[in-house]
Image 1 (cartoon, rainbow, N blue to C red):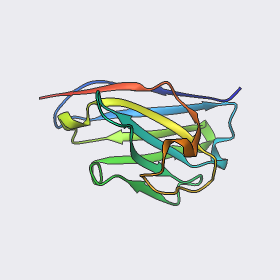
Image 2 (image 1 turned 120 degrees about the horizontal axis):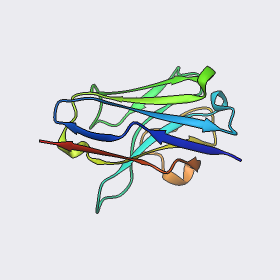
Image 3 (image 1 turned 90 degrees about the horizontal axis):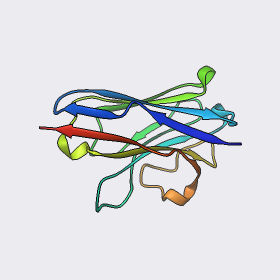
Image 4 (image 1 turned 180 degrees about the horizontal axis):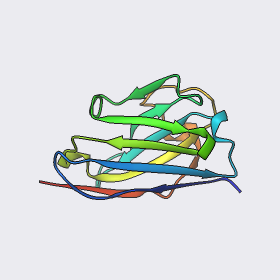
Length: 127
């Protein structure tokens, strides 16, 4: 009965912002680290960032560092990805995923380290 649902994707112009949400059901979210991933057409799925169960440790991919921010509201069982200064190369399907651990193993952790995945939400950034 475990489920993650992403929302907030859509179309933005370069330089604009979007906020993605990842809401959990059937999961005590504050027990687990949550990762954000993205996959562009023809590309491998790549890690965007990860936040530990309490939010005490957050890691970001170099490509988004300084532009994206991960936060969590455990009382609402939700994790957020705030995306600012968007670039066309940010265009991808974005996924959230639950780690088996409370801690983050790093942004480049393999996808098999995560055992529950959302269905993804499309982000498109135009020039």
